[in-house]
Amino acid sequence: MARSRKLEALLAQVNAVRSALPPQGDASPKDAATQERLRQVLQSKVGVAIAQAARLIGQHSLTELVPDLVAAFEQARVNPEKTDPNCLGKTAIADALYRLDYSDDALFLQGIHHVQMEPVWGGQEDTAAELRGTCALGLVRMNYPDVMTELADLLADPEAPARIAAARAIAYSGNPHGVPLLRLRARIGDDPPVIAECLAALLKLAPTPSVPFVAEFLNHPHPQTQELTALALGESRLPEALPPLQHWWAQTPDPEFQKTALLAIATLRFDAALQFLLTLLTHSNQATAQAAFDALSIYQQDTALWQEVRSRYSSRE
Image 1 (cartoon, helix red, strand yellow):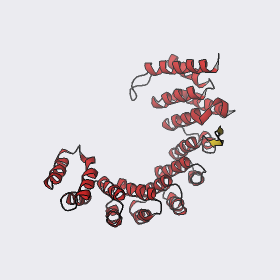
Image 2: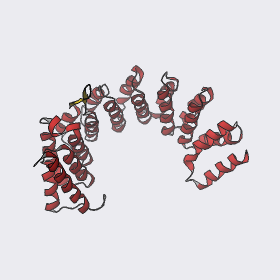
Image 3: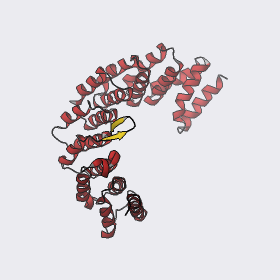
Image 4: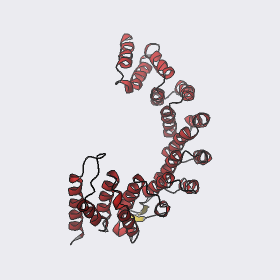
């Protein structure tokens, strides 16, 4: 069968299984026929179809197919550029096993070290960054003894998505030994999204002590880093984050930065932050009042608060 026809047939088989499965969260089917159809797809050596089957297995907790997922992962490591281009199959398998609380470290260690260079216009690119990140989460979940060493290496990965995944995995671990790793990664510099993920992880691992360190990045030379730092502080919902955000808002002449600062303050979601924004609605110039109104729009589902916001804003017109 031509490869395109084989892929079409396999995807049709997965879709048929998907249609027969109950809604996610309901009791999963245990019938042999359903399992066998998915098993056939996993044995197909066609990465795109394998990825679809693996997602269904993970979503519906079909633990009976764990051995078949592991076997498909091993097979996909053989000539992977041909059998599993873009690392789709292996990544979906790793994610399914992570969801299913798979606890054999061998597969996740293979995945976190896997590099898959594939040709692109003008050279090659590594398509396995997401796989490495997913396997990092798997190692954290199973409490792998040397997980912090693996995450330290991943935090220095050549690919930014893998470094972002490393920061998230360190936060997920809850291990305070990750704090110096995150501080070092942020301090030596990186792409703005990577730095922001490190800062967000710090605010989860060591909330109050990390606020002064994170706040330093509000003055970072890269504008995107400043904005992402502000949003990370807002998402932390820490009372200690309000003063540095207020200071950043007051001292920046950039209207866009001011809007970001007010949105971050709104995201803090505690009374002092809300009162600050409500005051701006009635005791500031039109541009600032508009920015505060826009920031407070995240509360539209809170009927009483939103009514007060609209009332205060309307009263100045």
